[in-house]
Amino acid sequence: MKTVLKLFARARDLAGSPTLEIELPESATAADLRLVLGERVPSMQPILSSLLIAVGNDYAVPTTLVAGRTDLAVFPPVSGG
Image 1 (tube, rainbow, N blue to C red):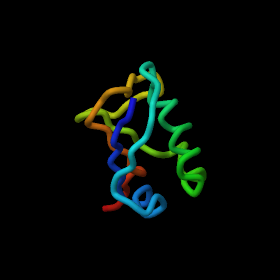
Image 2: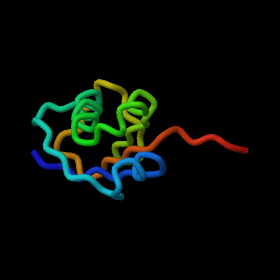
Image 3: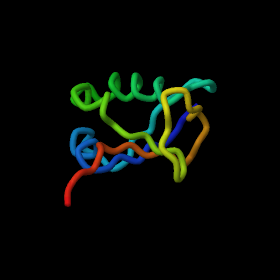
C-alpha cells in the first residue's frame, strides 16, 4: 500500500524533499515505518530512533497502525525556549 509521508525539519533536509512516497504492508506499524524509512533514506539512520511519527493529530507509539493512513508526518523532536 502506497503512502505519502510528510517530512519536516532535519528529516526533510536529509531526504531532500518535503514528502516521500513509500510502500507499506497493510499491517504496517510505526516501528515498520521507521525501518522502511531507514532503508529508503539511509542518511536518516542516525536520527531514526528519535523521530516523532504523527498520525493525524496524535503521536504514534511503535505499535500504532500506520498503513493506509493519508495523514502521516515525521519530524525530529523540537526544543527551544
